[in-house]
Every structure is written in structure tokens, then in C-alpha cells.
Image 1 (cartoon, helix red, strand yellow):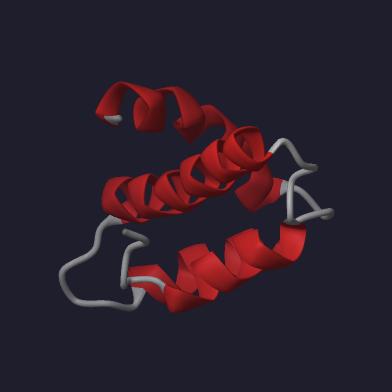
Image 2: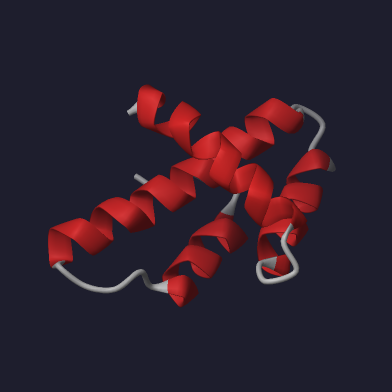
Length: 81
């Protein structure tokens, strides 16, 4: 899974700067306020949420659920199981 997370970092970086996904930037900035979380760790946490939703999308044969992704991001720094 860690290789997948690393592959998703560019997508996360794009989402952080995109006007279409301000909720990702919000989550990123919120995570950076945590004392033990640096930029790299914050991006990995967001990538894990993206990977979790992408995997669920494939497993359930459905569209990407943006609301579920937003919910996962809102739960950070608690990571999805």
C-alpha cells in the first residue's frame, strides 16, 4: 500500500492547489497545525484517504464518492482502517 500512497502524492499536491478541491487544502492546512505532522506526513495522510476511497470505488463497482472522501479527510489525523 505504501507504494500506492507514494504514487498518489502528485494527485494530492494537485488537489491542494486546485480551486476545485478547496476541502483538500483545508485538511492539509489543518494537519500542518498538528505538532507532530510535517508537510510530507500530511500529504501521505491525505493520499491514504484518496487510496481508501479509490479502493472502495473499485471494490463496490461505483463512482468515486466525493462526500465520503471529504468525510475521510475531516476525520484526519485519525486514519481510515
